[in-house]
Image (tube, rainbow, N blue to C red; front, top):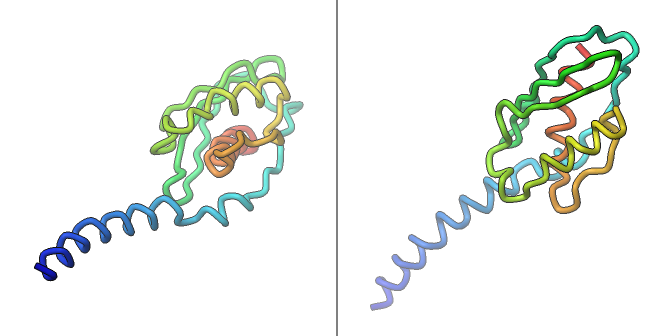
Length: 126
């Protein structure tokens, strides 16, 4: 009987441990990502593609610029699991309002927020 409990415990514990490690892998580094901001003064009108690739926070965005302003940002490839936090809309709203990526991250979704912001920087700083 003891063996059965150990086997069942292992079957439950090992996947949970794997999930925990997957979810937390890279959190410290992701929180410490530096945002450089963007300078829109020299960016011609057009659509720009930006990507950010760090562990599970990989994403791709399209940023549309007109008259030296970001007019829209579309998420082309979303951060896996981001629908749980639903922070993308808030992050994009903040960038459009500030016309910069140096905005506050969404509470409880700092690393995911920074992943979107870095993708936007990649699009507009290249």
